[in-house]
Length: 312
Image (cartoon, rainbow, N blue to C red; front, side, top):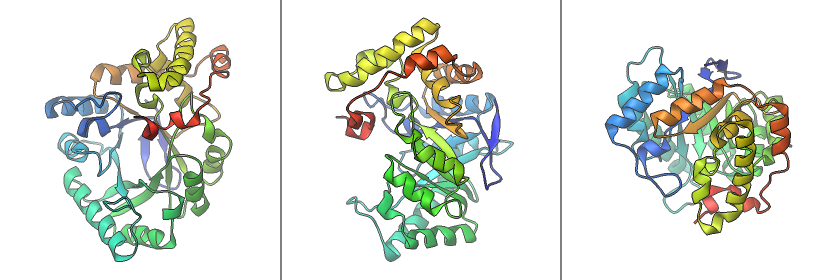
């Protein structure tokens, strides 16, 4: 496992990170129930054994934070746990004023208790958009950092407008930017990813399997996702010709893409076997150039399908 320092921080993180939403709540194609607590703990400990030291969670991920606290408490060296805090109320509207400050502070304190930590290494703004990046929010973030509650802030984003708004603010406030990126969704290559590099904001990738579409599960997609299935099937043919699985193809494409160079790529699984396969794929290195060339023509015409939030 290779490790990288996140720019502007003292955080040294594994090239591959583990996402934990499916450990805390139903998730993925078919909304599968999370494993039993004992199985979750075994998975998290195995991740540590494999050299993974970056764990992605959120206050909104059910029991995820609590499970991480149980499994990782006392681990040496201490892993980097990146959690998230929302900026919207129960009705989905953006919070402001005292309500926003109180919401953020109370959420962070709950995360600390669940994770069994005395500070939070990295907290990412969750469920925001370009309009939520206000001077008021930035002042609250700074005050939480000044008290020692949060060491570094980031944002988890979707689309192009939101990450560009984060990057406009820059590293002074945001140390990391988490974006969706995979071999079917390369829309951020033109502006967002180059700007993150230019501004010294660490790039964290998620959705590299597109919620299971870029895996063997592509054959079982419902009819309304048939366009995704067709594109995934084309990628599966490229993978088969290269003698590898579709999931290995997807992971190696995202992690080792020289034009992207992410600091961390987050993958989620509730299976130790899948976790080990992902690490093996990482260690296999970059895809050969002919394989990359064969992927260039694969695309999904309906861009809305690339956002799982639009799926039924």
